[in-house]
Image (cartoon, rainbow, N blue to C red; front, side, top):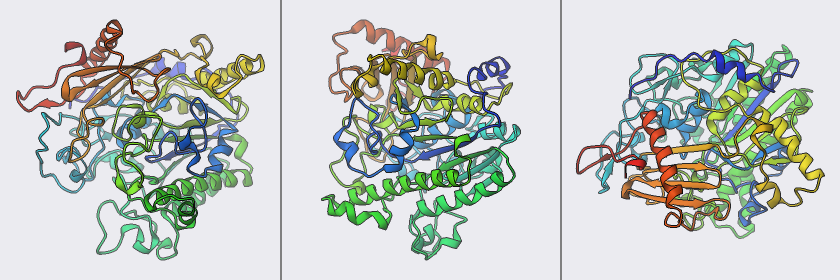
Length: 551
């Protein structure tokens, strides 16, 4: 795809200092990113109340963090991993930068070349019988250097933090670009320290007995590197990465330097190999083997969060450390390894990873920021993964930044600070008396600088797997207020849902509201056109499918 040219943001940078550069000294920041964990996979209730699925897994440390945080109950990420991760790094919407699917290990090997996951290790094409085939897109991912084919050239957020004096640390999964391109290495993206981050989108193995994949019979590009001291120790990968993350914090704390820790776990991605310390108790509760192993992966991540929080408190830096907790997409609801009934794992949300229905894109997100936010509050303004770029820079007090890309994300600082106070005041006045009230309570733009009816767009013009999945493949969505329009590209169909009344997207009301369908289709179509977004190709004509406003 054509790369976007240099885009200086001096004016935009001035807005970055709205509400967030109050901390002295600069705050430390921990970005705790979990892979493939769904909106209801935690005991933290982001919705109208506690759903049955919130009760499946033990996550006391996520609850502990929630009590100190602002919860964003309408937070969105991309349907799959790489687009979310590069949106966080760049501030761009995935459709805008043309990185709409996950990047394969090797460059110039599109991950959708086979219609899905087989492309990770092979470039052979496969005809699955669909009427659509893959578009042209930036399949090599994000690049901090110009001129790399099929990449989006962008200035990474960690580089801006590093330039502002932060000690930047990457631990775990990177997955921003393919091998042979600059973006594959965290060092090229502004990180001073890198523990095991590379092109891998998943681990070969979570087990130390397998050397995390580094054995002759198991090795491939997905094997987790730099972890030899844990081989044959019985240490699960999640635990090993946590220990390494804590080690890296000793230096900046001793030197009194602000740090940015990007703690990006492989868990809970496949293979579903749970931490053996937790599996048996879930079996004892009546879960099948796959469910128990997945639950153990979730609890292992929860322990990691608790260990890092404990360490920060022990070292006396917790009060000046911001913690951001997020997942990169919805929970996988299509993989048999997780056990249970397929396509139900994210209820009450519809579908899961890979899909633009709510189960694939709505994610947990919370911010701990002592002294700035009102803890234990819930804000329902829709926010997206690209918002993290300007928000983190603003929290860090980084101003007057210039970047190579246009930034689509909104600075959420005032939403977090003034918005959480507004919610707390409403509780004190009795305007909010239940979880349902809190979930639906609206923070006005005059308070937060973020429109509660802002437009949210996600675009997945791909087939995710080597076999067709009707509610996952070739979808685009636009959300505005309570209304959500779904464009099913494979059958040229527009669906309309009212998320306030129908969070499970069970009732298509497009026939009842043609004027809303038309308006949202027009807005979505124009935005995709202005972004030069990738569109799948019709096999019969060799031309891109119509934009939603052209139907």
